Length: 186
Image (tube, rainbow, N blue to C red; front, side, top):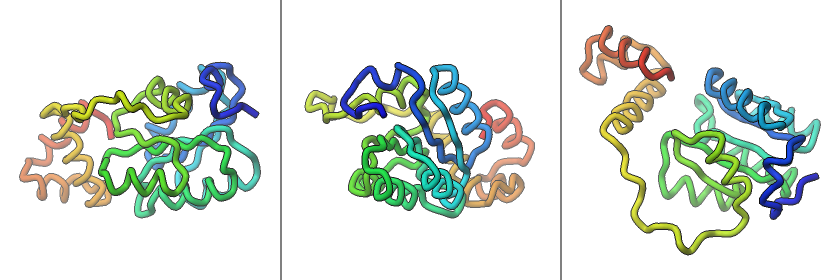
């Protein structure tokens, strides 16, 4: 098993990784990226699937989406940390907030990243064992496009991915929303 304080552990390959993500496209992209880096990857789309996987085997690392359809990824974080406290858990979210970050850390996550985050960001989070007192106090500025995308995605989730209802709530024509979604896949 890889030691959590080994900063090169994530790049040595062969580490077992659990991805808990309800967006199949994003989960597949993460899976492929980590497999290319030598990880043994298993993925789940719900808390129940995740629990079945981590009860059957031990994982060195886990990436857990905060919102899993109608369920909370925090449930997965808590159960995984209780079952295997040595697993390094990174929570990913498109809905970052101080409250959920604090709860994720309290429940056993070692890191909390706002989407969009890539494989490099996640690997850096796996390798980061101690806090960084030198981290800038100002938050990362979001672009108008990023804010727009996050709002569209949040509304899509609230509407159970019903494009017509989402367009109505956003005050957009359905085709306009469809074009925006084609440019940046959900």
